[in-house]
Image (tube, rainbow, N blue to C red):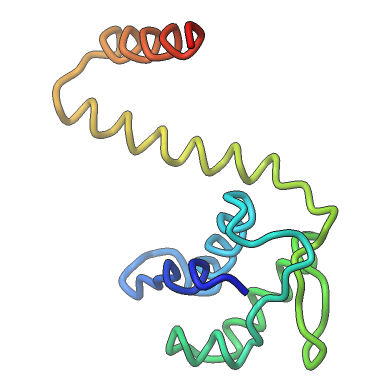
Length: 131
């Protein structure tokens, strides 16, 4: 298991998002960003719960739902691994959309109009095509 996966794992207990959803989201993002690779072993439920200082049942729920979604496979007592065939295309797109929305919110807070933002994005894309 990669150390980066664990060091970036932060739970926001003040968030409106339930803790088990935060755990799922972090695991999905770690897979999408290739921090966790296919067939990589995840921390045990107890180990992760202890590290995050949360109830092991919360981790169990997260893992159970990730199994149902086809993101990971395994079972309690035997260990959980990242599925080799899990399609992270949707998750990558969702991650990019979240980051893009944060950019848009900040640009609007800075006083940029929609047209100015579109122009900036267009210029960046054109620069990328010229490389």
